[in-house]
Amino acid sequence: MPMKKSTLRLILILVIFLCFSQSYGQEKLLDPGELYDSSMKLYDQGRCEEALEGFSKIVQSAPAGSFIAYSQYMIGLCYLKMENMKRRLNN
Image (cartoon, rainbow, N blue to C red; front, top):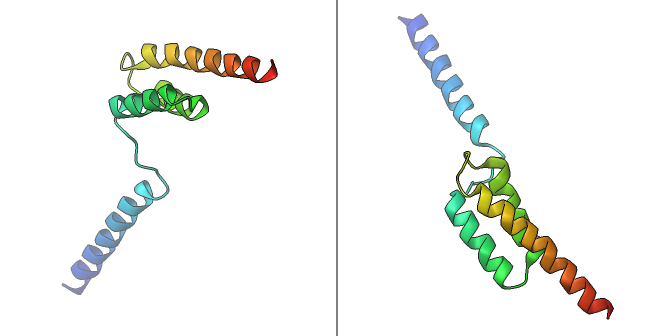
């Protein structure tokens, strides 16, 4: 009987350790739709570099076909808008 208790404790400790080790250091991932919406708000506010990060995360981590094409398009628009801002500042 004592061996069963120690084995059970060991298994419980391993399960707890595995649960914490998998979630440790991982940031909470947003739903691709939520991330797209928040990135669009940033883009509309002229915060293109921040929006670019959000759209890039979608392209890298979203399931195939889910917001990827829209995000790739918006990445292009972010670069275009940032280039236009640079031109205005230089003139």
